[in-house]
Image (cartoon, rainbow, N blue to C red; front, side):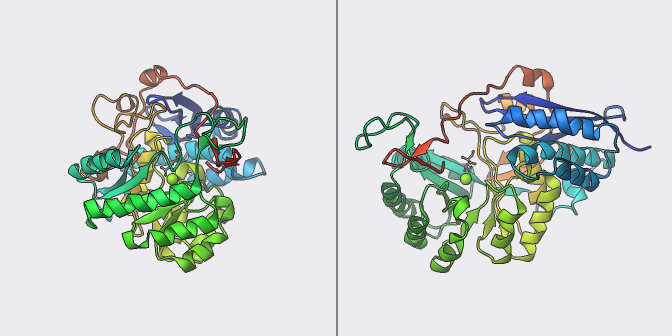
Amino acid sequence: MSVLITDIRTIATAPQGINLLVVRIETNQPGLTGLGCATFAYRHLAVQCVVEQYLKPLLVGRSAEAIEELWQLMHQNAYWRNGPIENNAISGVDMALWDIKGKQAGLPLYQLFGGQVRTGVPVYRHAEGRDLAELTDSIARLREQGVGHIRCQSGGYGGGAFGPAPAGAPEQSRDGIYLDPRRYIRETVRLFDVLRERVGFDVELCHDVHERLHPTDAIRLAKLLEPHELFFLEDAIPLEQGDWLRRLREQTRTPLAQGELFNHPLEWRTLLTERLIDFIRVHPSQLGGITPTRKLQLVAETHGVRTAWHGPGDLSPVGHAANIHLDLVARNFGIQEWSGIEPPNGVIQEISGSGSALLEVFPGLPECRAGHVYPSDRPGLGVELNEAAAARHPCTAGITTWTQTRLPDGSLHTP
Ligand SMILES: O=C(O)[C@@H](O)[C@H](O)[C@H](O)CO
Ligand SMILES: [Mg+2]
């Protein structure tokens, strides 16, 4: 008997203070439901509207089994395609359909993709600090836990906290996160000089520029960091300046990672075919789910580009699980980001671990042990959602301040 979609709902919850959005699909088979990640933390109400007002009426009553057909139907239904709101909404449904497929088969999703090529997923974790002493402490703690890849940032992506303009800015400059690109470059190079002296080369180090440099400055930084043999330098230039990647590539041997902001295939296609990056950094919900991400992974494999799927705090555990299932089967796997959760108060909490609010809301979320993440062996994505617990952590829709980055002259810059 065919599995029919009977209901599509969204569940919004913020167990760690970050708005997460998950889609649940109900079917006509008793107990057979699926979960998908539709998290766009800073516009969750808009995604919720697309799912409940547009995708639900489009899909209820249809068979849940033809995932590719339903993906194309959703993708083409609004005529104008792509974009983070549309793609995250489609992702919620797409992942939930894959979750249902796995549960029907009685298999974890990685089995449906061909089976594991590795038993656990190596991850990189974030080491942060306001200064070098805090940062080296944080690195030492992660290394004690067995983490082999560490992203090192000092002073919040090269800027400080959100607040008033510093001395030297024009009069009446607005509040923001003020960033001085030249000082940031100097401090970052100095940071890695000291880190390599202290920790040596037996640990892989990454750094995220977070698009906060002009292209020529990014080239300078990438070249200055060459002696430190980074695992990768992330988002060295803004998405809108992608053509500069050719020049950056020609001039530096520092490996490049890019892509957490991509939502359109044209944003990544040339980067793969021309081998302009070494690691592709999208997260599946931003692309429209598992269906398009699996295709991207295979195109990247044929071009020798490795994956480093985006795994930030503003992604639901369902989305993290999707990353892990894809990682387990990918021949061109590079590394997986495993962020921990960074709530607005800046206190980093583990993404999993007994007693955490996140684990209570999302039982079965993948577990991180000694620098590797392991999925649950339950069928499908393997993550459940406790809706009663989710309701105890309501979302708030407010003004996002961390994206308000400013240059020393007070003008806005890419976040
Ligand atoms: O690579 C990262 O983890 C960061 O760029 C975050 O994804 C970004 O700040 C949005 O949460
Ligand atoms: Mg990033």
